[in-house]
Amino acid sequence: MNFVEFTQSSAISKVAFDHDNGEIGVAFTANPEKFYFFECDDTDGFVTQLEEVVNKNESLGKFISELRQDGTLVSV
Image 1 (cartoon, rainbow, N blue to C red):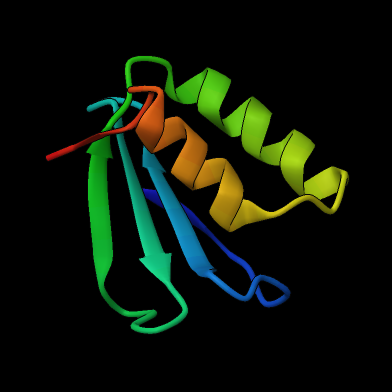
Image 2 (cartoon, one colour):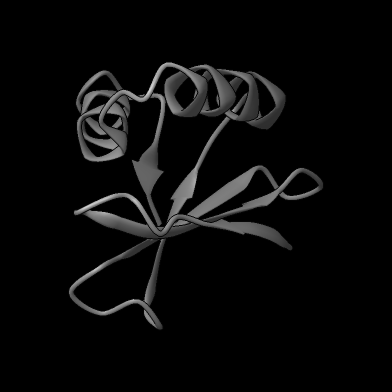
């Protein structure tokens, strides 16, 4: 599983992705060592969107929340 660490986000500490198993892991700043895992049908699309959010300096917390609400990320 690959992961990216975010030092500028007030909500998200790390995001991990496992392309083979279609899983995304999210660690929040409140407990940066604990990952919450989600199923994701399109991990490549997720990573592309994540890169866009980071490049535009947009909110990572809002991005993750929206994907949970629309069903792109489903808790496991």
